[in-house]
Image (tube, rainbow, N blue to C red; front, top):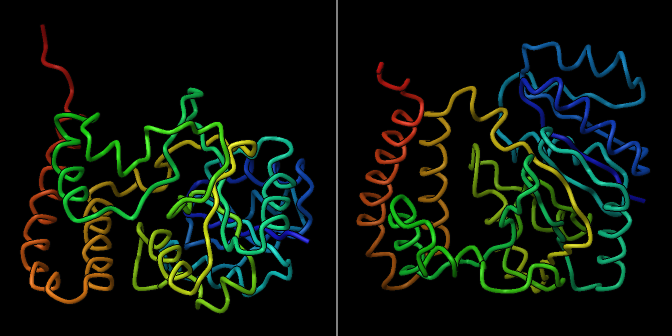
Length: 285
């Protein structure tokens, strides 16, 4: 049996579409962790699907903490964990469950994720070496197709083929219940972002593997909740990146952490500037 967990924050209309697509793909047990929404999400969902279990967290706990609490209420051997702003294509759930059943070493599997315009989103990635991480962090602003970003995003292999990868995006992932529980679920110290990388990293250290299955597909509208507080999310993202570095750097590399902190602060500032310029209205003719 597969259960579903949806983490919601003020994404009412998208949430309804997400739950509708899960029902259409055969999911019976759905738990929605509502992170203190004020847009009527819970009432709207109850009106159209009385069988969904809604967990009101009472505050915006972030993705990982809310997902952990909803996971504790599920009963399935496998649990799909996701954002609310996506639609599951028919057959996706069966395909992902089959992947986990056929490979007992897989703890997590993710589908092909497509943007709203039908373009492909690189959701399967590597744990980047320090050089790749720095190159991707800064060059993507000016040269999005640089070799560091391409290596990190795994752009140079056939994404029509299923394979094991380092990590898959928490936008939508299916986890094996016993593996997720044994690992302690998501690290709740990550408010937003990188909790998926961290989870897959910890599972890999326990001997588990992570899979990418392109025969399963979801359509994702990126940033519905994060766009409500974009600058806060930029800061949260870079704070999470630093936390992951603190957890994973060992030996002599730990001496680099102050430089990493400075680099991430600079990158966060650049990201905020880029965001401000993107939202600036065009000059009058």
